[in-house]
Amino acid sequence: MVSATIRRNAPFSGVRLLDSARDLAGVADVLAVSFRGQMDASGERAVNEMRAFGRLGPLTWWLEQLTPIGEGFAPGFVYVDAGRVVGNATMRRAPAYGRGYIIGNVAVLPDYRGHGIARQLMDACIERAREEGSSWVALEVRADNAPARHLYQSLGFKQTGALAQLQRVANTLLPQMNAQVSAWVRRPRSGEEGQVFSLAQSATPEGLRWAEPLRESEFAFGWDRKVDLWLSGRSEAWWGVESESKLVGAIEAEMFRNPRDEGRLRMWVGKEYRFHAELLQAALATRQVATRTMQLTHPAEDIDALQVFERYGFRPVRTLAHMKLNLR
Image (cartoon, rainbow, N blue to C red; front, side, top):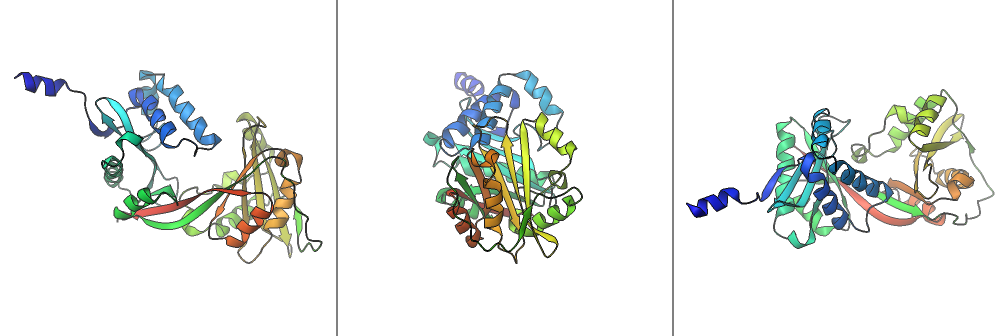
């Protein structure tokens, strides 16, 4: 009788649904330890926001009820050992490309690794996706993380592509441009939003589109977009390459109001064109871009473009393999 009472009162250990009201602070600690030295500024902001929401306690739970499954603060699962959060895997509904879920932040504290916790968390996410009628689940993993890739492959995930992340330190000198310029670089004009959006879609490999699906609203050059960005503490600048009277390449620079925050570059060039240097030269020649550290992401399969980026001072940070599991 005494032993049965002890078992009933013992803290729960195992996998359960993440409870925002009590788990967010513990999840933030797991992520901070597991990805120490790997998170960019946006990742650090997300962890800090998670801690802030965690301090709201029951209020966080009420806010979570207002959002659909897969779209809340950090939906997913935790692994708890005697009441302590030691592992986490989040899942969110993919905003496009069919009924899918994206699994993220699969992390286990170092002292608990090697005991099958990550597999249990993954199994829980996959089963939840099946219950929700999902046709696929997908994730990103560092290409050099052999144990994690082995786990995902053993669960049936297949690699669909890879995305290289590079960084250029502020005020890095620009190389000399070739005297022969074969295209006209200019700012996109109002009315060309659809053309740039179509270009970006066609230039993004199909195996990478599920991770960061492009939205037409992001490709806007009018004052409405500028006001929205200003209210969120950001700004954008665009350049395009015109050849034979059509835009065949574009680059977007996104900056935060604080100049110490890392900015972001995104570039799309038609498959039959090689105007990466011209676009980089135009963007990096402006003070607002050149004087801050910038991150650039690009398909890892585009070796020629990556070599151009290296000449302009971009250094590889990591390569993320994109993996997908079909459930039907």
